[in-house]
Length: 515
Ligand SMILES: Nc1ncnc2c1ncn2[C@@H]1O[C@H](COP(=O)(O)OP(=O)(O)O)[C@@H](O)[C@H]1O
Ligand SMILES: [Mg+2]
Image (tube, protein in one colour):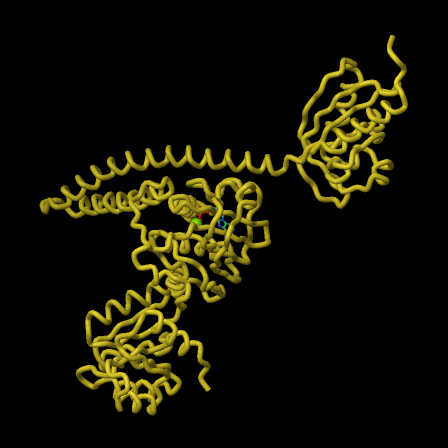
Protein backbone atom coordinates (compact mmCIF):
# COMPACT_ATOMS: atom_id res chain seq x y z
CA UNK A 1 0.00 0.00 0.00
CA UNK A 2 1.27 3.40 -0.91
CA UNK A 3 1.85 5.71 1.95
CA UNK A 4 0.03 9.04 1.52
CA UNK A 5 2.34 11.74 0.26
CA UNK A 6 3.67 13.62 3.17
CA UNK A 7 3.57 17.39 3.12
CA UNK A 8 7.35 17.28 3.02
CA UNK A 9 7.55 15.21 -0.16
CA UNK A 10 4.79 17.27 -1.81
CA UNK A 11 6.81 20.38 -1.16
CA UNK A 12 9.93 18.73 -2.55
CA UNK A 13 8.16 17.61 -5.66
CA UNK A 14 6.67 21.08 -6.14
CA UNK A 15 10.13 22.55 -5.76
CA UNK A 16 11.57 20.18 -8.33
CA UNK A 17 8.94 21.05 -10.97
CA UNK A 18 9.27 24.74 -10.28
CA UNK A 19 13.02 24.44 -10.60
CA UNK A 20 12.70 22.67 -13.96
CA UNK A 21 10.14 25.06 -15.41
CA UNK A 22 11.89 28.22 -14.24
CA UNK A 23 15.29 27.13 -15.44
CA UNK A 24 14.60 25.97 -18.97
CA UNK A 25 16.03 28.24 -21.64
CA UNK A 26 12.58 28.34 -23.26
CA UNK A 27 9.43 30.27 -22.52
CA UNK A 28 6.65 28.13 -21.11
CA UNK A 29 2.95 28.87 -20.97
CA UNK A 30 -0.47 27.39 -20.49
CA UNK A 31 -3.37 29.17 -22.11
CA UNK A 32 -7.09 28.57 -22.03
CA UNK A 33 -8.73 28.06 -25.38
CA UNK A 34 -10.36 29.49 -27.30
CA UNK A 35 -9.92 32.73 -25.30
CA UNK A 36 -6.15 32.45 -25.31
CA UNK A 37 -5.98 33.80 -21.77
CA UNK A 38 -2.74 32.83 -20.07
CA UNK A 39 -3.15 30.74 -16.97
CA UNK A 40 0.52 30.05 -16.42
CA UNK A 41 3.84 31.54 -17.63
CA UNK A 42 7.41 30.93 -16.53
CA UNK A 43 9.90 33.74 -16.02
CA UNK A 44 11.74 33.04 -19.28
CA UNK A 45 8.54 33.66 -21.21
CA UNK A 46 8.14 37.00 -19.42
CA UNK A 47 11.70 37.82 -20.37
CA UNK A 48 11.19 36.90 -24.04
CA UNK A 49 8.10 39.09 -24.37
CA UNK A 50 9.24 41.81 -22.02
CA UNK A 51 6.27 41.51 -19.64
CA UNK A 52 6.23 41.46 -15.87
CA UNK A 53 4.69 38.34 -14.24
CA UNK A 54 1.80 40.55 -13.03
CA UNK A 55 1.10 41.84 -16.53
CA UNK A 56 1.20 38.28 -17.88
CA UNK A 57 -1.92 37.40 -15.91
CA UNK A 58 -3.86 40.06 -17.77
CA UNK A 59 -2.79 39.41 -21.34
CA UNK A 60 -3.58 36.66 -23.79
CA UNK A 61 -1.58 34.85 -26.43
CA UNK A 62 -2.95 37.35 -28.99
CA UNK A 63 -0.91 40.12 -27.41
CA UNK A 64 2.25 38.20 -28.19
CA UNK A 65 1.50 37.56 -31.86
CA UNK A 66 1.93 39.95 -34.75
CA UNK A 67 -1.53 40.87 -36.12
CA UNK A 68 -0.90 39.15 -39.46
CA UNK A 69 -0.62 35.81 -37.63
CA UNK A 70 -3.95 36.04 -35.78
CA UNK A 71 -6.08 34.46 -38.46
CA UNK A 72 -3.91 31.42 -39.03
CA UNK A 73 -3.39 30.83 -35.29
CA UNK A 74 -7.09 31.08 -34.63
CA UNK A 75 -7.73 28.55 -37.41
CA UNK A 76 -5.19 26.20 -35.94
CA UNK A 77 -6.65 26.51 -32.46
CA UNK A 78 -10.05 25.52 -33.79
CA UNK A 79 -8.56 22.46 -35.38
CA UNK A 80 -6.89 21.61 -32.09
CA UNK A 81 -10.22 21.82 -30.28
CA UNK A 82 -11.80 19.35 -32.68
CA UNK A 83 -8.87 17.01 -32.66
CA UNK A 84 -8.82 15.87 -29.07
CA UNK A 85 -5.88 13.50 -29.37
CA UNK A 86 -2.99 15.31 -27.74
CA UNK A 87 -0.23 15.87 -30.24
CA UNK A 88 2.58 18.41 -30.22
CA UNK A 89 2.82 20.76 -33.18
CA UNK A 90 5.60 23.12 -34.10
CA UNK A 91 5.21 26.43 -35.90
CA UNK A 92 7.23 29.57 -36.49
CA UNK A 93 5.34 32.82 -36.06
CA UNK A 94 6.15 36.48 -36.15
CA UNK A 95 5.77 37.49 -32.51
CA UNK A 96 5.46 40.77 -30.74
CA UNK A 97 7.05 41.95 -27.52
CA UNK A 98 5.27 44.31 -25.16
CA UNK A 99 7.28 47.24 -26.50
CA UNK A 100 6.00 46.55 -30.03
CA UNK A 101 9.23 45.09 -31.45
CA UNK A 102 8.93 41.80 -33.30
CA UNK A 103 10.89 38.59 -33.50
CA UNK A 104 10.55 35.15 -35.01
CA UNK A 105 9.43 32.65 -32.41
CA UNK A 106 9.15 28.92 -32.71
CA UNK A 107 6.28 27.44 -30.72
CA UNK A 108 5.68 23.84 -29.85
CA UNK A 109 2.06 23.44 -28.92
CA UNK A 110 0.10 20.61 -27.35
CA UNK A 111 -3.52 20.59 -26.43
CA UNK A 112 -4.71 18.84 -23.32
CA UNK A 113 -7.24 18.85 -20.56
CA UNK A 114 -6.11 20.64 -17.46
CA UNK A 115 -8.39 21.11 -14.45
CA UNK A 116 -11.25 19.98 -16.67
CA UNK A 117 -10.65 22.68 -19.19
CA UNK A 118 -9.21 22.42 -22.63
CA UNK A 119 -5.88 24.23 -22.66
CA UNK A 120 -2.88 24.56 -24.89
CA UNK A 121 0.51 24.20 -23.43
CA UNK A 122 3.32 25.86 -25.38
CA UNK A 123 7.03 26.30 -25.44
CA UNK A 124 8.37 29.44 -27.13
CA UNK A 125 11.89 29.96 -28.40
CA UNK A 126 13.32 33.07 -30.09
CA UNK A 127 14.73 31.79 -33.40
CA UNK A 128 15.31 35.13 -35.13
CA UNK A 129 19.05 34.70 -35.19
CA UNK A 130 18.86 31.08 -36.32
CA UNK A 131 16.60 32.03 -39.23
CA UNK A 132 18.87 34.89 -40.19
CA UNK A 133 21.86 32.55 -40.29
CA UNK A 134 19.96 29.97 -42.34
CA UNK A 135 18.93 32.66 -44.82
CA UNK A 136 22.46 33.86 -45.03
CA UNK A 137 23.76 30.38 -45.69
CA UNK A 138 21.12 29.80 -48.32
CA UNK A 139 22.05 33.09 -49.95
CA UNK A 140 25.76 32.25 -49.94
CA UNK A 141 25.05 28.85 -51.47
CA UNK A 142 22.87 30.37 -54.13
CA UNK A 143 25.54 32.94 -54.99
CA UNK A 144 28.12 30.22 -55.21
CA UNK A 145 25.96 28.16 -57.54
CA UNK A 146 25.26 31.17 -59.76
CA UNK A 147 28.97 31.99 -59.72
CA UNK A 148 29.96 28.52 -60.85
CA UNK A 149 27.36 28.52 -63.58
CA UNK A 150 28.09 32.04 -64.80
CA UNK A 151 31.84 31.46 -64.64
CA UNK A 152 31.52 28.29 -66.69
CA UNK A 153 29.45 30.00 -69.35
CA UNK A 154 31.73 33.01 -69.46
CA UNK A 155 34.73 30.81 -69.92
CA UNK A 156 33.23 28.87 -72.82
CA UNK A 157 31.87 32.06 -74.27
CA UNK A 158 35.31 33.66 -74.20
CA UNK A 159 36.72 30.82 -76.25
CA UNK A 160 33.97 31.18 -78.83
CA UNK A 161 34.47 34.92 -78.93
CA UNK A 162 38.15 34.38 -79.44
CA UNK A 163 37.38 32.51 -82.65
CA UNK A 164 34.91 35.14 -83.84
CA UNK A 165 37.26 38.01 -83.22
CA UNK A 166 40.27 36.15 -84.58
CA UNK A 167 38.58 35.42 -87.91
CA UNK A 168 37.16 38.91 -88.09
CA UNK A 169 40.62 40.38 -87.71
CA UNK A 170 41.91 38.05 -90.39
CA UNK A 171 39.18 39.10 -92.79
CA UNK A 172 39.84 42.75 -92.07
CA UNK A 173 43.41 42.24 -93.17
CA UNK A 174 42.13 41.40 -96.62
CA UNK A 175 42.68 44.66 -98.46
CA UNK A 176 40.58 43.61 -101.43
CA UNK A 177 37.37 43.99 -99.38
CA UNK A 178 34.89 46.67 -100.37
CA UNK A 179 34.17 49.27 -97.82
CA UNK A 180 30.58 48.24 -96.83
CA UNK A 181 31.93 44.78 -95.98
CA UNK A 182 34.73 46.35 -94.02
CA UNK A 183 32.26 48.41 -92.03
CA UNK A 184 30.26 45.31 -91.20
CA UNK A 185 33.35 43.45 -90.10
CA UNK A 186 34.38 46.43 -88.02
CA UNK A 187 30.99 46.31 -86.30
CA UNK A 188 31.50 42.62 -85.55
CA UNK A 189 34.92 43.32 -84.12
CA UNK A 190 33.53 46.04 -81.84
CA UNK A 191 30.83 43.71 -80.61
CA UNK A 192 33.35 41.04 -79.75
CA UNK A 193 35.24 43.60 -77.72
CA UNK A 194 32.13 44.47 -75.78
CA UNK A 195 31.38 40.81 -75.31
CA UNK A 196 34.79 40.14 -73.87
CA UNK A 197 34.45 43.07 -71.47
CA UNK A 198 31.19 41.52 -70.32
CA UNK A 199 32.74 38.13 -69.81
CA UNK A 200 35.61 39.71 -67.92
CA UNK A 201 33.09 41.19 -65.49
CA UNK A 202 31.35 37.88 -65.06
CA UNK A 203 34.65 36.14 -64.49
CA UNK A 204 35.44 38.67 -61.76
CA UNK A 205 32.13 37.84 -60.14
CA UNK A 206 32.82 34.12 -60.27
CA UNK A 207 36.29 34.77 -58.87
CA UNK A 208 38.02 33.28 -61.87
CA UNK A 209 40.38 36.10 -62.70
CA UNK A 210 44.04 36.17 -61.96
CA UNK A 211 44.66 38.68 -59.24
CA UNK A 212 47.93 40.04 -57.99
CA UNK A 213 47.80 40.36 -54.24
CA UNK A 214 50.17 42.51 -52.27
CA UNK A 215 49.96 44.52 -49.06
CA UNK A 216 47.72 47.46 -49.85
CA UNK A 217 47.02 50.65 -47.95
CA UNK A 218 43.26 50.94 -48.15
CA UNK A 219 43.39 54.68 -47.41
CA UNK A 220 45.69 55.11 -50.34
CA UNK A 221 43.29 53.38 -52.71
CA UNK A 222 40.43 55.45 -51.34
CA UNK A 223 42.36 58.66 -52.00
CA UNK A 224 43.26 57.51 -55.50
CA UNK A 225 39.63 56.82 -56.38
CA UNK A 226 38.50 59.98 -54.58
CA UNK A 227 40.65 62.06 -56.90
CA UNK A 228 39.17 60.26 -59.89
CA UNK A 229 35.62 60.65 -58.63
CA UNK A 230 36.09 64.35 -58.02
CA UNK A 231 36.77 64.72 -61.71
CA UNK A 232 34.05 62.40 -62.97
CA UNK A 233 30.99 62.67 -60.72
CA UNK A 234 28.52 65.48 -61.36
CA UNK A 235 29.08 68.56 -59.22
CA UNK A 236 25.72 68.19 -57.45
CA UNK A 237 27.17 65.21 -55.68
CA UNK A 238 29.32 66.09 -52.74
CA UNK A 239 32.01 63.54 -51.96
CA UNK A 240 33.20 63.20 -48.38
CA UNK A 241 36.04 60.97 -47.30
CA UNK A 242 37.01 60.05 -43.81
CA UNK A 243 39.95 57.72 -43.44
CA UNK A 244 41.05 56.20 -40.20
CA UNK A 245 44.83 56.25 -40.02
CA UNK A 246 44.79 53.09 -37.90
CA UNK A 247 43.48 50.96 -40.75
CA UNK A 248 45.92 48.15 -41.31
CA UNK A 249 47.23 47.03 -44.66
CA UNK A 250 45.11 44.50 -46.47
CA UNK A 251 46.36 41.69 -48.66
CA UNK A 252 44.74 42.66 -51.92
CA UNK A 253 44.87 43.39 -55.59
CA UNK A 254 44.82 47.21 -55.66
CA UNK A 255 43.18 47.29 -59.09
CA UNK A 256 40.29 45.18 -57.83
CA UNK A 257 39.89 47.28 -54.69
CA UNK A 258 39.71 50.31 -56.97
CA UNK A 259 37.06 48.50 -58.99
CA UNK A 260 34.93 47.97 -55.86
CA UNK A 261 35.13 51.66 -55.03
CA UNK A 262 34.28 52.68 -58.59
CA UNK A 263 31.32 50.32 -58.99
CA UNK A 264 29.79 51.32 -55.66
CA UNK A 265 30.33 55.01 -56.35
CA UNK A 266 28.74 54.76 -59.78
CA UNK A 267 25.69 53.10 -58.28
CA UNK A 268 25.56 55.86 -55.67
CA UNK A 269 25.69 58.42 -58.46
CA UNK A 270 22.81 56.69 -60.28
CA UNK A 271 20.84 56.67 -57.04
CA UNK A 272 21.23 60.45 -56.66
CA UNK A 273 20.16 61.97 -60.00
CA UNK A 274 19.31 65.23 -58.23
CA UNK A 275 22.49 65.34 -56.20
CA UNK A 276 23.35 64.35 -52.67
CA UNK A 277 26.30 63.17 -50.66
CA UNK A 278 28.58 60.23 -51.28
CA UNK A 279 30.42 59.30 -48.13
CA UNK A 280 33.42 57.00 -48.17
CA UNK A 281 35.09 56.00 -44.94
CA UNK A 282 37.61 53.50 -43.67
CA UNK A 283 38.14 52.23 -40.17
CA UNK A 284 39.98 49.58 -38.27
CA UNK A 285 37.61 47.17 -36.54
CA UNK A 286 38.26 44.29 -34.23
CA UNK A 287 35.68 41.54 -34.31
CA UNK A 288 35.65 39.34 -31.26
CA UNK A 289 34.49 35.78 -30.57
CA UNK A 290 31.04 37.03 -29.63
CA UNK A 291 30.66 38.71 -33.01
CA UNK A 292 31.86 35.54 -34.72
CA UNK A 293 29.11 33.50 -33.09
CA UNK A 294 26.50 35.72 -34.69
CA UNK A 295 28.37 36.26 -37.96
CA UNK A 296 30.20 33.03 -38.74
CA UNK A 297 31.31 34.39 -42.10
CA UNK A 298 33.76 36.69 -40.31
CA UNK A 299 36.49 35.07 -38.27
CA UNK A 300 37.59 36.95 -35.16
CA UNK A 301 40.38 39.43 -35.77
CA UNK A 302 41.22 42.82 -37.21
CA UNK A 303 39.46 44.00 -40.34
CA UNK A 304 39.73 47.03 -42.52
CA UNK A 305 36.19 48.31 -42.83
CA UNK A 306 35.33 50.19 -45.98
CA UNK A 307 32.01 51.92 -45.88
CA UNK A 308 30.27 53.65 -48.78
CA UNK A 309 27.03 55.53 -48.23
CA UNK A 310 24.80 57.68 -50.32
CA UNK A 311 21.78 59.84 -49.68
CA UNK A 312 20.02 58.50 -52.76
CA UNK A 313 16.80 56.67 -53.53
CA UNK A 314 17.57 53.54 -51.50
CA UNK A 315 16.22 50.10 -52.32
CA UNK A 316 13.07 48.13 -51.69
CA UNK A 317 13.03 44.64 -50.21
CA UNK A 318 12.88 42.90 -53.57
CA UNK A 319 15.98 44.70 -54.86
CA UNK A 320 17.88 44.00 -51.65
CA UNK A 321 17.22 40.30 -52.10
CA UNK A 322 18.74 40.16 -55.57
CA UNK A 323 21.19 43.00 -55.84
CA UNK A 324 24.36 40.90 -55.94
CA UNK A 325 23.08 38.56 -58.63
CA UNK A 326 24.64 39.01 -62.03
CA UNK A 327 22.36 40.76 -64.52
CA UNK A 328 19.98 41.92 -61.82
CA UNK A 329 19.26 45.54 -62.60
CA UNK A 330 16.39 47.95 -62.01
CA UNK A 331 17.82 50.41 -64.48
CA UNK A 332 16.29 50.47 -67.92
CA UNK A 333 17.65 48.51 -70.86
CA UNK A 334 20.91 49.94 -72.05
CA UNK A 335 21.41 51.76 -68.75
CA UNK A 336 22.43 49.06 -66.32
CA UNK A 337 24.19 45.76 -66.90
CA UNK A 338 23.44 44.35 -63.47
CA UNK A 339 27.07 43.32 -63.18
CA UNK A 340 28.42 46.10 -60.95
CA UNK A 341 27.49 44.57 -57.63
CA UNK A 342 28.06 41.03 -58.83
CA UNK A 343 31.68 42.05 -59.48
CA UNK A 344 31.93 43.75 -56.11
CA UNK A 345 30.60 40.61 -54.45
CA UNK A 346 33.09 38.42 -56.30
CA UNK A 347 36.02 40.66 -55.42
CA UNK A 348 35.08 40.83 -51.75
CA UNK A 349 34.78 37.03 -51.55
CA UNK A 350 38.05 36.62 -53.45
CA UNK A 351 39.70 38.69 -50.73
CA UNK A 352 38.19 36.61 -47.94
CA UNK A 353 35.97 39.52 -46.96
CA UNK A 354 32.32 40.15 -46.36
CA UNK A 355 29.85 42.69 -47.69
CA UNK A 356 26.62 43.92 -46.13
CA UNK A 357 24.07 46.32 -47.52
CA UNK A 358 21.80 48.54 -45.45
CA UNK A 359 19.14 50.32 -47.43
CA UNK A 360 15.54 51.48 -47.23
CA UNK A 361 13.43 53.02 -49.97
CA UNK A 362 13.97 56.75 -49.90
CA UNK A 363 16.48 56.53 -47.08
CA UNK A 364 19.77 56.11 -48.91
CA UNK A 365 22.12 53.16 -48.97
CA UNK A 366 25.20 52.01 -47.12
CA UNK A 367 27.51 49.23 -48.15
CA UNK A 368 29.96 47.95 -45.59
CA UNK A 369 32.86 45.82 -46.67
CA UNK A 370 35.02 43.96 -44.19
CA UNK A 371 38.43 43.03 -45.55
CA UNK A 372 40.81 40.86 -43.55
CA UNK A 373 44.05 42.64 -42.78
CA UNK A 374 47.39 41.34 -44.05
CA UNK A 375 49.73 39.59 -41.67
CA UNK A 376 52.48 42.03 -40.89
CA UNK A 377 55.46 41.14 -43.10
CA UNK A 378 57.99 39.26 -41.02
CA UNK A 379 61.15 40.14 -42.91
CA UNK A 380 60.91 43.87 -42.36
CA UNK A 381 59.07 44.11 -39.10
CA UNK A 382 59.84 47.71 -38.35
CA UNK A 383 58.05 48.87 -41.49
CA UNK A 384 54.78 47.31 -40.53
CA UNK A 385 55.03 48.50 -36.98
CA UNK A 386 52.33 50.86 -35.92
CA UNK A 387 54.67 53.33 -34.35
CA UNK A 388 55.32 54.87 -37.75
CA UNK A 389 52.71 57.37 -38.72
CA UNK A 390 51.54 57.58 -42.33
CA UNK A 391 49.29 60.02 -44.11
CA UNK A 392 47.37 60.70 -47.28
CA UNK A 393 48.98 63.93 -48.35
CA UNK A 394 50.69 64.47 -51.67
CA UNK A 395 54.44 64.89 -51.43
CA UNK A 396 56.75 66.19 -54.11
CA UNK A 397 60.09 64.46 -53.66
CA UNK A 398 63.10 66.00 -55.40
CA UNK A 399 66.42 64.21 -55.35
CA UNK A 400 69.02 63.71 -58.04
CA UNK A 401 69.80 60.18 -56.87
CA UNK A 402 67.63 57.62 -58.70
CA UNK A 403 67.86 55.23 -55.84
CA UNK A 404 66.79 57.71 -53.19
CA UNK A 405 63.98 59.01 -55.31
CA UNK A 406 62.53 55.62 -56.14
CA UNK A 407 62.96 54.04 -52.75
CA UNK A 408 61.63 57.19 -51.10
CA UNK A 409 58.58 57.10 -53.34
CA UNK A 410 57.92 53.45 -52.64
CA UNK A 411 58.38 53.91 -48.93
CA UNK A 412 56.14 56.95 -48.65
CA UNK A 413 53.47 55.35 -50.80
CA UNK A 414 53.53 52.39 -48.55
CA UNK A 415 52.53 54.68 -45.72
CA UNK A 416 49.66 56.13 -47.66
CA UNK A 417 51.14 59.20 -49.30
CA UNK A 418 50.82 60.12 -52.93
CA UNK A 419 54.30 60.89 -54.24
CA UNK A 420 55.44 62.94 -57.22
CA UNK A 421 59.10 62.82 -58.08
CA UNK A 422 61.55 65.19 -59.66
CA UNK A 423 65.19 64.61 -60.55
CA UNK A 424 66.38 68.18 -60.05
CA UNK A 425 65.37 71.66 -58.96
CA UNK A 426 64.08 72.70 -62.38
CA UNK A 427 61.82 69.69 -62.70
CA UNK A 428 60.61 70.11 -59.11
CA UNK A 429 59.73 73.72 -59.77
CA UNK A 430 57.95 72.86 -62.99
CA UNK A 431 55.81 70.26 -61.24
CA UNK A 432 55.16 72.62 -58.34
CA UNK A 433 54.01 75.38 -60.69
CA UNK A 434 51.52 73.05 -62.31
CA UNK A 435 50.22 71.32 -59.24
CA UNK A 436 50.88 73.57 -56.28
CA UNK A 437 47.23 73.21 -55.23
CA UNK A 438 47.43 69.51 -54.75
CA UNK A 439 50.95 69.32 -53.31
CA UNK A 440 50.94 69.36 -49.53
CA UNK A 441 54.62 69.02 -48.87
CA UNK A 442 57.87 69.28 -50.79
CA UNK A 443 60.87 67.24 -49.81
CA UNK A 444 63.99 68.75 -51.26
CA UNK A 445 67.55 67.58 -51.56
CA UNK A 446 69.78 70.62 -51.18
CA UNK A 447 72.66 69.49 -53.32
CA UNK A 448 71.35 68.86 -56.78
CA UNK A 449 72.84 69.75 -60.13
CA UNK A 450 71.36 72.71 -61.98
CA UNK A 451 69.62 75.35 -59.94
CA UNK A 452 70.18 73.37 -56.73
CA UNK A 453 67.90 73.01 -53.73
CA UNK A 454 68.37 76.41 -52.20
CA UNK A 455 67.29 78.31 -55.29
CA UNK A 456 64.43 75.90 -55.83
CA UNK A 457 63.29 76.49 -52.25
CA UNK A 458 63.29 80.24 -52.80
CA UNK A 459 61.28 79.90 -55.99
CA UNK A 460 58.72 77.61 -54.38
CA UNK A 461 58.26 80.01 -51.50
CA UNK A 462 57.84 82.82 -53.98
CA UNK A 463 54.95 80.94 -55.61
CA UNK A 464 53.41 79.93 -52.33
CA UNK A 465 54.84 81.61 -49.21
CA UNK A 466 53.14 79.10 -46.95
CA UNK A 467 54.55 76.05 -48.78
CA UNK A 468 55.78 73.33 -46.49
CA UNK A 469 59.27 72.33 -47.52
CA UNK A 470 61.32 69.67 -45.84
CA UNK A 471 65.04 69.83 -46.55
CA UNK A 472 67.05 66.63 -46.77
CA UNK A 473 70.76 66.85 -46.91
CA UNK A 474 73.80 64.67 -46.48
CA UNK A 475 75.60 67.34 -44.57
CA UNK A 476 73.92 67.55 -41.29
CA UNK A 477 75.16 70.70 -39.67
CA UNK A 478 76.23 72.53 -42.75
CA UNK A 479 75.97 76.26 -43.23
CA UNK A 480 73.73 75.71 -46.22
CA UNK A 481 71.14 73.96 -44.04
CA UNK A 482 71.03 76.84 -41.64
CA UNK A 483 70.57 79.13 -44.60
CA UNK A 484 67.72 76.99 -45.93
CA UNK A 485 65.98 77.14 -42.59
CA UNK A 486 66.45 80.90 -42.55
CA UNK A 487 64.90 81.20 -46.03
CA UNK A 488 61.78 79.47 -44.79
CA UNK A 489 62.13 75.70 -44.95
CA UNK A 490 59.80 74.05 -42.50
CA UNK A 491 62.16 71.38 -41.25
CA UNK A 492 65.46 69.69 -41.92
CA UNK A 493 66.41 66.02 -41.96
CA UNK A 494 69.95 64.70 -42.23
CA UNK A 495 70.77 61.88 -44.66
CA UNK A 496 70.89 58.99 -44.24
CA UNK A 497 67.66 59.06 -42.32
CA UNK A 498 65.79 56.28 -40.59
CA UNK A 499 62.36 55.43 -41.92
CA UNK A 500 60.66 56.20 -38.63
CA UNK A 501 62.45 59.48 -38.29
CA UNK A 502 61.43 60.60 -41.77
CA UNK A 503 57.80 59.61 -41.28
CA UNK A 504 57.62 61.44 -37.98
CA UNK A 505 59.14 64.60 -39.40
CA UNK A 506 56.75 64.50 -42.34
CA UNK A 507 53.83 64.27 -39.95
CA UNK A 508 55.23 67.05 -37.82
CA UNK A 509 55.55 69.35 -40.81
CA UNK A 510 52.19 68.35 -42.30
CA UNK A 511 50.29 68.79 -39.07
CA UNK A 512 51.86 72.15 -38.33
CA UNK A 513 49.43 74.98 -38.90
CA UNK A 514 50.89 77.75 -40.91
CA UNK A 515 50.64 81.11 -39.17
N1 LIG B 1 23.52 52.87 -54.03
C1 LIG B 1 22.38 52.34 -54.51
N2 LIG B 1 21.18 52.92 -54.27
C2 LIG B 1 20.05 52.38 -54.74
N3 LIG B 1 19.98 51.23 -55.45
C3 LIG B 1 21.13 50.59 -55.72
C4 LIG B 1 22.39 51.10 -55.26
N4 LIG B 1 23.35 50.26 -55.66
C5 LIG B 1 22.73 49.27 -56.35
N5 LIG B 1 21.40 49.47 -56.40
C6 LIG B 1 20.41 48.58 -57.02
O1 LIG B 1 21.02 47.34 -57.32
C7 LIG B 1 20.88 47.04 -58.71
C8 LIG B 1 22.09 46.26 -59.18
O2 LIG B 1 23.26 47.07 -59.18
P1 LIG B 1 24.46 46.70 -60.14
O3 LIG B 1 24.80 45.26 -59.96
O4 LIG B 1 25.56 47.68 -59.95
O5 LIG B 1 23.83 46.83 -61.58
P2 LIG B 1 23.43 48.14 -62.41
O6 LIG B 1 24.03 49.33 -61.73
O7 LIG B 1 24.02 47.92 -63.74
O8 LIG B 1 21.94 48.16 -62.42
C9 LIG B 1 20.70 48.38 -59.37
O9 LIG B 1 20.00 48.28 -60.59
C10 LIG B 1 19.89 49.15 -58.33
O10 LIG B 1 18.53 48.82 -58.38
MG1 LIG C 1 26.01 49.41 -61.17
